[in-house]
Image 1 (cartoon, helix red, strand yellow):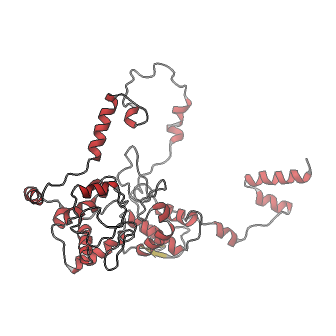
Image 2 (cartoon, rainbow, N blue to C red; image 1 turned 90 degrees about the vertical axis):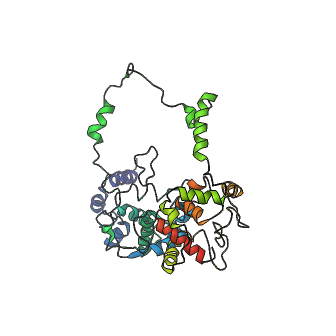
Image 3 (tube, helix red, strand yellow; image 1 turned 90 degrees about the horizontal axis):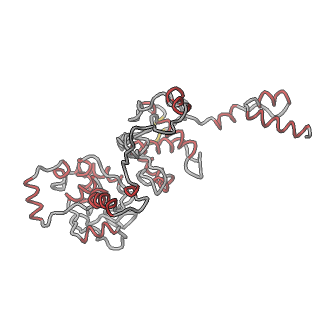
Length: 366
């Protein structure tokens, strides 16, 4: 082997071992990195705010920036597209068999979100965002997880004041003392349990064919789960039902569409969550979702020129009319009210927001 080849290989090995700078200085190879060169690579942000650039961004600006740079993969509402990650939702699912891990449900530190967006996003064009744009996107993600209000502005000055819900949900990694011993002892090869019980058939998971007895129970459960809500047969029946049962907060809020100016103004702010897909008012046209002019009192699936899901068309054919009460129930839980419809929005959580956005839609031609 030539001396040059030995030198190259030796340099590579020493570089991997982390001793390249000292070796390079001794051998007269290269030079120490300049402070500005180190700074260009030193992008990490710590939970205590160390490494944060100076800047700020609002939820409102973040919605636009997110739509332009992130929504193609993560959805307009951070709900995820196809197999791209969901960035919002999942509250209370960490103890489920299939938890949804998002910024709001799982991540302990906001710096993780900022650092990742700043370092690696948008996909295919990493580090193209200005600090203010990163702050705005992270603010919008907080809003999408119902952690801040729509007028929130995130900056390097208030960054550490934001505490995520799962901040105390992590524990010290003690696997070396707890789990490792379990996997280093002699394995049990026979009579390891007193009894073995079958807890589920593969047919329940739809991965193998089964006999009629296997399929009957899951099929019945699926049919019951996917059944659409039954609508009252007549308006008289609906009125009678409303008088015999105590109204829910949503029903009470939507009993009559408000014409109060303050409520309508509040609805305009809430409608920002809707306007990426729906248009209402003068000149409104179909977009990702159908236009909402004339929606109150209209049958479901009835806007000309819009391609509805089969489920929404069937609901309309079955007599579903967009009364204020039905709109309220739909906005509360879109997938629950019309199962398998195409609207990706998870729903509005606050009854006041639901009533306000209905008032705004009604006041603008809805």
